[in-house]
Image (cartoon, rainbow, N blue to C red; front, side, top):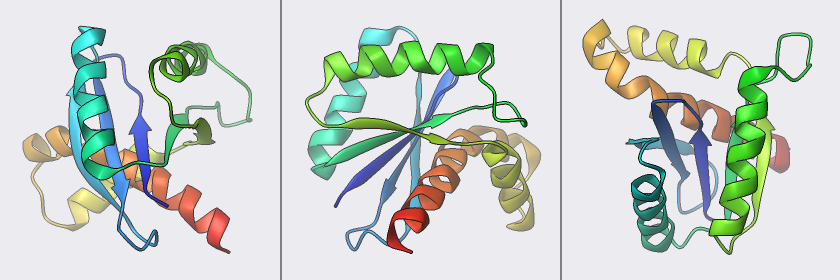
Length: 137
């Protein structure tokens, strides 16, 4: 199953994808969130290129598991996305994925300026990998 992960952000959306075996997630790119029609156009291109079967959107819950303002934005985004694409869209807990992605980029020796460009897609990959691990185990 070809999966696509989205790390929702107000400015940028991080995009990650599963490998052809469905075992590993890897960062693809980020897409600017606005204008939304331009975001959606690029997202649909990626979905078609990768023959995506399902989209997983990171849900930024608070540390206690509750829903905060950012999660409400993601819920609105998911509602619009479900009306805009024909493949299934679901959410997955993404607490601390950006922090983990930043740590991994730093460990890889990527400088802060370059890491800032890559953290969105990397966070999407961390979240997607967590989802994939949960369904395979």
